[in-house]
Every structure is written in C-alpha cells, then in structure tokens.
Length: 492
Image (spheres, rainbow, N blue to C red):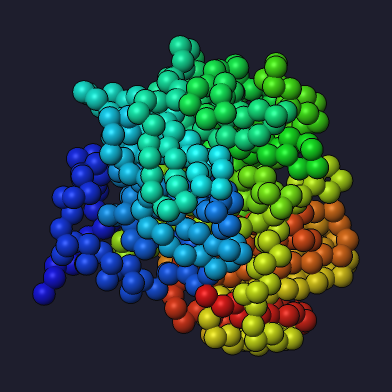
C-alpha cells in the first residue's frame, strides 16, 4: 500500500530544488492519485495536472493555434524548481495539454525557468523570452533574460548565452521580460528592483531581426509615485492605439493606490508610448485590475485578429490554499478580452466562452433554495436602478454556509464576502471585498467553477475574481428577496 504524502509539511530549499529525475515513479503516482481525487478540481479552467501553477507565460498565436504557457512546479503544491508547461487551443476555450516544454536545464536557468513572453518570428518559429533563475554559494542569486525558439514541431532550442544581463544599479530581482511590437521595432519591458530597493520597469530594444541582440533604453516613465520595492510581470499592450501598462507592484504604499491583496495587479492608461525617451506620455491614474481576492501576474498580448487578450493567475505569492493538502494549487482565469470605453479599461470573457453554455434555465432566486447540478455555471442577473439584494452562492441546503454577494444598485456598491465558508482558510487572506460602479441599472455575469468565482459587472466595467473552497455538497443558490436570473451549466 502506497504511503500517503503530507504535501502541507514545510518544504526545505533542498527539496524544492531537487532535480526532476530524483522523483520516483511511486511518488509521482501517489501525487497524481491525490490530485485526481481532489474535491477542488475545476471543470473549465486551466489547472496543473499535479503540483503548483502560477504565472501565465508566452501567451501568443502561433502555427494556427493559441499558445498559453504557464509556470509550474510539477512535484508539489509549493514554489520549487520551475518549468513552463504549454496549453494550446484553436478557440481559447478547448485546451490541449502539451506537457512540460521549457525546462531549467542550463547554467543560465539552473534554479528555474521563470516568467516571460512569446512572439512569433515566422510560421515555423515562436520566440520565447524568459528569466533564468540561478543560485550560487550562500544562496546568492543571478537573473538572466534568456531566449529560446519553440518550433512548429514542438521542439525547444535555447540560445547559448543570455540576451540580457542585469545592468548596474539593479538587484537580482530583475525578471519577467515581456516582448511587444511598437513603431516598427521589437521592445521588451522587464520588472525590476533598483539598488535602492525601489520598484521599476526597464525598457529594452532588439537591435536585430533575429532578436539575438538587445540594448537597454532606460527605466519606463509612467508615474511620479514610488512603486513599492519591486515590480513584477509588466505587460504593455495597445488598445485603440493607446498604451495600457499592466503590472504588479510589491510593497506599494496604500496611500498611493488602495488595495487589500498581499500584492496588487494594477494598470495605467496613457496617450502614447515614446520609445526614445522610454515614456508613457500623459499616463493616467493607477487602477486595480481586479477587485476580487486573487488575481496576479496577468499576461496580455495584441492578438493578430485585433483583439487584446489576457489571462491571469488566480492566486497570489505567499498564499496557502486548501488544495495544497491534495498536492496541487493554482488555476488560470478565463481568457478575457480587454477594451477601452470612455477612457476606462473593460475586461470580459472572450465571445467564444458562449460555446461552454448548455442547459439554459430561467429561474427565480429567493429565500427558498435553488438546487443546481454542480458549481460549474454562468449566472446572469439584471437589477433595476433602485434595487438592493443579496445573493448566496456555493451555499449549503440550509444556507448556513455560503459566499454572499450584496448588491446596492442605487449606490453602485457590490460587496463579496466569503466569511461563511465551511473550509476555514479565507480569514488569513481577507473575507470581504467591495467595488463600485456608477449608480443605475446593473448587470452581473457570474462564472462559478468548483473552486473559483469570476464576477463581471456591466459587461466588464469591473471584475471580482476569487478562489472559493467549500464542500462538494454546497451547490445551492439563494437570494434575500425574489430575483429573476438566467443560468447555464458550463461544459468541461
């Protein structure tokens, strides 16, 4: 009989960085069985087969398919020796797991293939730009910005030497290169920490078409405020020709921008990208990208069909969740299209998401329980401009445990509360979140999956994304007062 493994035990540094070949077949089988039996596995979200998933990487369109890599430690639910796994899809909905692709197997990425991005060079080659994490004596660290080619046949060819090394004036917290096209050239932005331990973003430019040579252009200017002690996962996309910077500032003073998460995922909208001066001109205010509990490391790109597409890690650094006891953690959000309306960023699931719908029902929620087959559904409700109500999701039959959503349309306030979950974990990471929209009629599209919840307000004006951990039998819906709704079960 195979021994049960305690995945919640403290992992030593040596255990986190064990070579993959050291994991026995028995260990992998035990881990796989534990994950397969987990009550928290989602139906239609990307999640790891085993182990830990975190940042989405290399989101791109190549060889007739969407490619979405993600960072993964495949042998435990902790941050360990990272590789890139790959999912491909013809439609952003139905994904094929292509397995691990980018391994930590050179002297320039010996302790992890960390986050990065991708850009097609041709129909046959996809350029990958990523951070290689290495460690030396006394746990010293070096970060290298490495290049690789992913071929049409699925092979990886790494460049022999790093494309960029950390310049003077920065610490070893220098990572997450994001490549993009602008003004007929190829650029990359990199998250960084200065020697004074200030968070910043550094701009680089390719000096040849093969992307084998790069020069630094300086720090990207987009705010006069101090951005904490580190910026991770910067992305620059162009929506209606306006540059939109997505980024994750760590240690940001809450007097600069209010947030409740461990670290926020934020954005700014600017008028232009001036590559010569490394400036986003007329950059606006900082905004939270998501008003839920867990969204981080969002990666976006300008797709060839003209859309700007994004996916987020539904998780946070330094966050422990109940699924770790089952040998896994971390999922990716639905793929969202980013648009601008009246100078504001909107996010909404791509139109292809409709293909997941089946078994449409028009229902009326009330104090009497509405029973549904599973917590894998889309719920759509519309409320009048003076209406107040409260929804109870992931609820028990007697509604003693649930997730609540208070809606005050007149004052434009929505409050998400997960204090009454039967799995006691949320108190360590926040139980209440609120967001505001302009008063008036309100529409909500709520995407529930076994252990996740994504709420889109007014077709993406605001978004609240969170992990939800409850018991399998909590599949009831309630409302404080009568509320018409439409519900679709969502396919795997």
